[in-house]
Image (cartoon, rainbow, N blue to C red; front, side):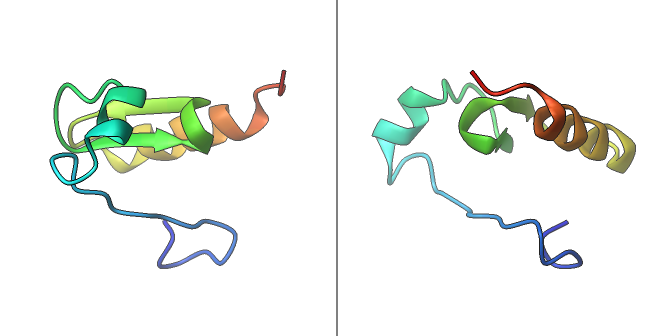
Length: 64
């Protein structure tokens, strides 16, 4: 998504190199996608529709 939309950014992190982030986001499998610092997440390869739905749900979730 980040490659085709300037409004989406992405960082790739190696869990073994950053164990504090792996613990913070409870990484139990890879790939793990964390959206907006935990507003949404999913583990494993997901169909494109599921990925988009997760991002939209996290983006529209009330902050608080």
